[in-house]
Image (tube, rainbow, N blue to C red; front, side, top):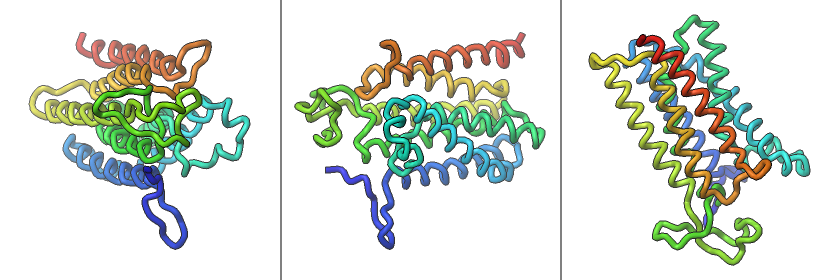
Amino acid sequence: MVDPIAFNIGGIAIRWYGLLISISIILGIFIAYRLAKYRGENPEEVLNFAPLGLLLSLVGTRLVHVLVNWGHFVRHPLEIIAIWRGGFAIHGVILGGVAALVIYAYVRKLNFWRWADILSPPLVLGQAIGRWGNFFNQEAFGYPTDLPWKIFIDPAHRPPGYEEFSYFHPTFLYESILNFVLFLVLIYLHRLSQRGKRLRDGTIFIVYGLSYAVYRTVIEFLRVDSVFVQGIRVVHLINLVGIVIFVALYLLVVARKRA
């Protein structure tokens, strides 16, 4: 049985989910700091931005999760603040982070698109690491399967109607792997941009957003815990809006500048 608690300190349980998120944040700040320096920006801006970025990302991720799962939280309102149990929506992290960067870039008179490019790789790497919190919480898995890489789910965590199945698609793993691959692609694009093939500011951010929306849409077809509205998966609706937005941004920010 997978234990969601990593260890205890003085009677306080430290959960894997929170520990992995903490690691993601620390590593993300470190990578963003190095990337900012590599791209010729003041790396101290990363440290100054971090508190606002983390705050609005936390608010955004929890808000979107609660709204998407409103049917559950309206019956259990006290669980809305129980963030230590997990329950985060990456779309909320992105929205909150973008909102924070818009505010910070405006106040500090920074190039929003350049900084969105810088922050994209550490964000998707954090997603890759954070997805393993789903493993320890036994959540975000897919339909039953007999594939060699199947994952065992304890009876207590199996959704209604799937009690007789033991093994399921590790969809959290699929997304984690693709997130890590995307992280490497984004880092390569930064290197490419500094080697005489300068990319338009905003290109890397758009590649991140569009790529994630596409493969998350595919993975969601396998998820057994999707929330539906009128027979349509809510995540698919969100991703569809995201794809439209990022294609529009490409046309307005990147393609337009090339013309």
